[in-house]
Amino acid sequence: MTSSPALDHGMGDDTTIAASERILRVAGAQLGPIARDEPRATVVERLIGLLEAAHSQGAELVVFPELALTTFFPRWYFDSWDDIDPFFETEMPSPITAPLFERARALGVGFSLGYAELTADGHHFNTTILVERDGSVVGRYRKVHVPGHEAHEPWRPFQHLERRYFEPGDRFDAWQAFGGVVGVATCNDRRWPETYRVFGLQGCELLLIGYNTPIHYAPDPGQNRLAGFHNALVMQSGAYQNGMWVVGVAKGGVEEGVDSLAESCIIGPSGEVVARTDTTGDEVIVADCDLARCANYKTTLFDFDRYRRPEVYTRITAQRGVIAPEGS
Ligand code: CDV
Image 1 (cartoon, protein in one colour):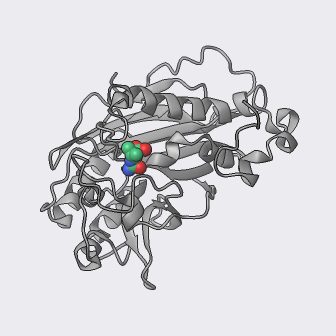
Image 2 (spheres, rainbow, N blue to C red):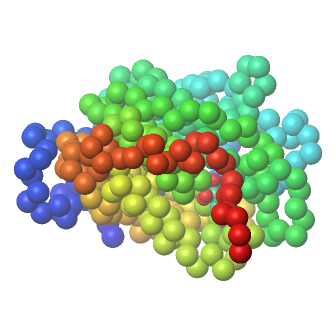
């Protein structure tokens, strides 16, 4: 499927609920692989090229992937923080990333950008920053669901050591930005329905999700052939069940020998995909996201205030793992 602002969003004539349009033209800026030795400055040049391509198509907001400045380094085991910390940013913007911020402000384009954050007091997070069209920082999001493992597991063809290198974030905050209510989540967060619902409960109309998803899933390779299906399944259902736009953007392709899912897409509050990449490299997709359309779902089938039963859902926050009923 190619991207097109003029694409029929498949919502027919269901215009009775959304009073007036609130259209934001959003771009997903998919990245192809970043080599381990690719300098940050070169990556920033690629990001600026994608930003300019998105702007030339009228986009006001550009969504970049998770950990968009480096290769996906959790695939390697490192014993010493001296080897890990060079993948992290200690300031944002920094002298190297400042040209992206400056170009975006000059063009009047906002963006979200995933990067590895090392705080002044030594904490490591998988972070995404959201920047408005005037260059102001809307907020920073730190990945809540950190997947993978903590220790070296030599049986795997490659590692997924996010749990060794990142602490989890502890907040899902939506923000007033871009003329609507906007949230950010990161990669594995998209597989958890709680993510979308916590944003949905804040009236979120647009959720931005960057990801790096290796297609080979070592704990259960039987899932490999379903990587694309599961990617679409979780984001489409999250969009529909919460009446929000979801923009999922990959760093895809074969990076340092590991094949990662591309299939970046923009999904409407109906749950329908309205734009999707058709390569595994650097590629921009664009869609006109009418944020007012969210009301069609938020005020009908998914009128939370009318229909939800939080008193019946207490296990969701009171309990972490499974507790099966007693008996055989
Ligand atoms: N970067 C990620 O969070 N990747 C995970 C792994 C587990 C494949 C994902 O959910 O896509």
